[in-house]
Length: 173
View 1 (cartoon, rainbow, N blue to C red):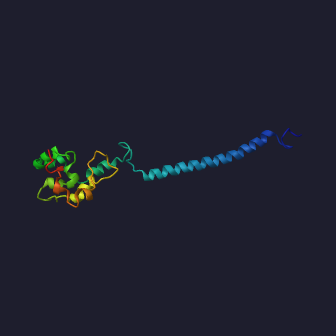
View 2: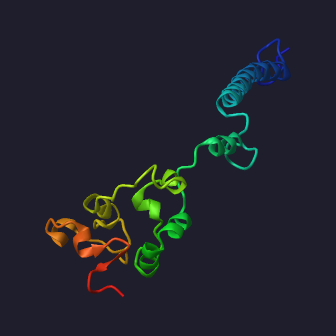
């Protein structure tokens, strides 16, 4: 008996079920490959991401204890101002009022604890000032910028400018 459109001896549903099994075999392989990929990703992620990650937001919770264990190196501008009120008065009125002391003078917690133990060196204005004030297109237009070679002609910044109130001498408030 010949069924319409099917070879003799077989019926349409038999062929469809054989094709479905062949297709299912491919789908099972893809699903197994996907499952292995997901498990591999999760395994590697578990090995690489620290246990404390995510405890307090999107960072390592253990970092808080690690940072707290580091020695304190910055004293803070309040400590500087308490011992150096004369410089503080000039700085508060000047253009560098918002710049922390240790931004230019470096970390001075040891000096604050024992002023004789560490005497901070005077910063080299020829190196320090251009770090912030050298002209650059990346800086906002309102920020004071100079081309140091043209501006100073080789003269060190602190000859004409007092670092704590950097307007040229004679123009200070």
